[in-house]
View 1 (cartoon, rainbow, N blue to C red):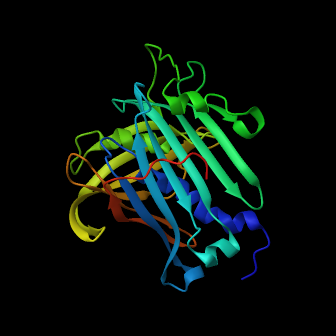
View 2: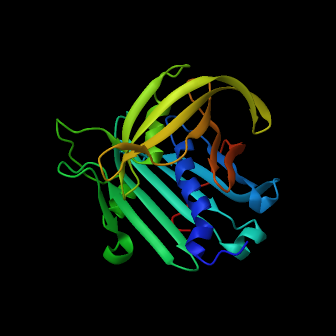
Amino acid sequence: MRVHDRSRQRFPLRAVLCLLLLLFAGPGLAAQLNFQVLYQGIFSAGSKLQIADLSLSERRPAAAPYHESELRVTSQAYDYVEALYPIRYRFRSWYLDDHSTGLVSEYFEQNRREGIRHRLIYLTDPEQPFVTRDLVEEGEADLPDLLAGDYRFVLSDSHEARFDRLGLLAHVRAQALAPGTFLQAKVSNGKKMLTYRVRVEKREQIQAAGRNWNALKLRFDGLGVDKHGREKHAHRPVFIWLSDDPQHTPLRAVSRHVLGRFSIELRSIDQTPRLVMRGL
C-alpha cells in the first residue's frame, strides 16, 4: 500500500499515544513504572509488535502544594521503528496535592521532520478554559518555576476543575472505585476542551509485570461538539486496567484504531527509581 502523506503515516501512533496517556500518573507512586507499547494490525501482519518503551516517575517539587508526573516515550531500542519514524515524547503534568484539579501540563516532541514542539497548557485561567504557550517561540516561560516548586497560581472561588490527560487519571485513581462507578471531568490537550466520561466496567484478574493482579477495567470516553453544537465522540473508547487496591496501579491500556490495536503493558516496577533527567 502506498501512502504519500507522511502525516497520515504517523497519525495512528501519535494519536493513540496521546489517548493512552490516561494510563499514567496518580497518587502515591513510590516507584518508577516501566511499560512497553505494542501494535497489532495490518502493518504487523496480525502479530504483536513492540514499538516503544515508556517510563513514569512522580515527585513533589520542593514544598510546593502540587505534584508533578513525568512520562517519557522512546523507540530508541527498536531499529525498525527508528528507521521509519523515531518516537521521542515527554509529557509532564502538575496538579494539586488532593488531585482535585490540574494546574499546568507540558508537551514535548522531537522528531526529524518537524524538529521540536514544546508547549505549556495552563488550566487555571479564570476567563478561558485553557491557555497554550509555545515555548519554542517564547522561551521557558513558567517551566523553571514549576520544576523548582516555585510556581504561583490563584484559583477563584468559582473555579471549575480542569485536567490534562495525565492529571485526569491522577484524579480518577484518587477516588474510591468499584464496578459501576461513574466520573466526568473537563480535559484539554492544549487544542480543545473535551468532556471525559469514565466508568468502571468490572473486576478481572490479569497478568502484568510477571505476576497476577486483581484489577478493575475502566472505560474512558472523550466527547467534543460538532459545528452544530451537538455532542460527538472525539475518539474510540480507551480501556484501562488498574489494580483493585487503594494504589490503583496502572497495569494495561488498550485502544483500537482503524489500522489496528495499540496497547500499553506494565513490564517492571523499579522500587528505587532513577533520578528524573531534564531533557530528552
